Image (cartoon, rainbow, N blue to C red; front, top):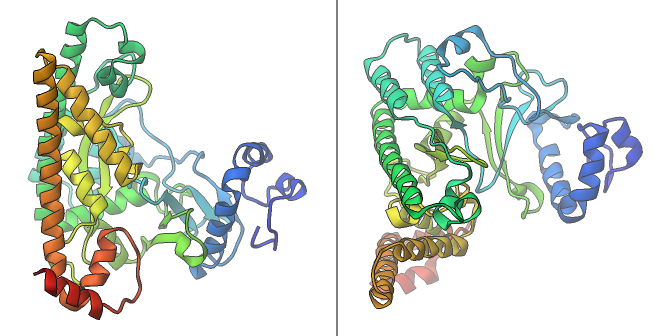
Length: 415
C-alpha cells in the first residue's frame, strides 16, 4: 500500500494481487484481520518499504508455498516425511537472490523447530558448508539424537493431560500418572541432549555458525536459487511505529550478521505438540549478549531471567504450554505458579500438608528468582555511568542514548 500511496486496501487492487496475496486471502484478511491489526500492518509495511536493500518493490507472500528439496538433503534426511515448507515467508520483486525474507514476530519467532530427520539433515548440511564429510563428534551427536528423539502416543495435548482436561478428563489416574511419568523421563532425555548439543556448539563455533546459517536460510536444503531459500531474517514488532517496527534485521549474506545471530541463539530439545502425539523437536530460543563486547560480563534481561528460571525448574517447566515464550512476564510467572500448584495437588497428603507443600514450593521458586534478579542488579550497579542504560535494557526498554549521571549516583548510594 505504501508503494501504491494508499492508506488502506482496495478491492480492485486486491483483485490484481497488488498486495502480494490471492484475492481470497484478501477477503479473509479484510473481514477477520484488518479491523484489529490494520494499523499495525501499515506501520510494518512502511518499515519494510524503507529498507534500502529491498528496493521498494512489490512484496509477495510465500510462506504457504512449497520448496524443492535437493538430492543431498534427501539423502541426509532420515525420516519418512520430509518437510518442504519454505524458509522464505515473503519476497520482493521476482523472488530471486537478495529478495527473500524469513519473517519473525518479536518474542515468538524461532530459527528452527525440527523433528529428528530435519535436525540430522541440518547437521549434515552444516558439515557440507564446512567442507567436511565425516566428523566423529557430530556423528556421535546424530546417534544420540536417533536414540533420544521420541514420539509419545496421546489422544490430546500435554497441557490437557497435565491439567486433566479434554481427553484426560475421565482418564484413569494410574494411566494418567504413567503417561506423565513417561513424559517426565523423556524430558530428562531432552535436557541431556540439549546439554550435549550446546557443549558441541560451544567447542566448535564454526559448526554452530553453519548449522544456524542452514537452519535460517535452507541453502543446502533448497539450493541457492530456489525462492524457498531465505536471504534475510527480519523480526518485527507490531506494537511499534516507524522504523522501530523492524526489531531485528539480519542479512544472511553478511558473515558478521550470521555470527551475531549465532551468538544470540541457543538450541535445545523439547516436546512439540499439536492436537495429539507430542514428539521431540530441536528448537531455538534467543539469549541476550552484550552488543559492544561479546566477552563482556553477561547481564540478562528480566524476561530472559524469568524464562531461564522457569525452564530450570522441573515443577514449572512441565506445566507450561509449548508456546509459553510468547507470554509476557506476568503471564509467565502466573503460569509457573499454577504449575507448582497443580504439581502439589497430585501429592497424596492431607489438606494442611498439601497447603504447606504448595506454599513452600512457591516460596522456594520465588526466592530462587529473586536471588537471580538481585545478582543481575548487583552487576548493573557496578557499571557506574552505564548503569541507567543497563537498567532500562534489563526491564526491556530500548534506549539509544541516556544521561546516566543521576542514576549512577543513586546506584553509588545503594552500594
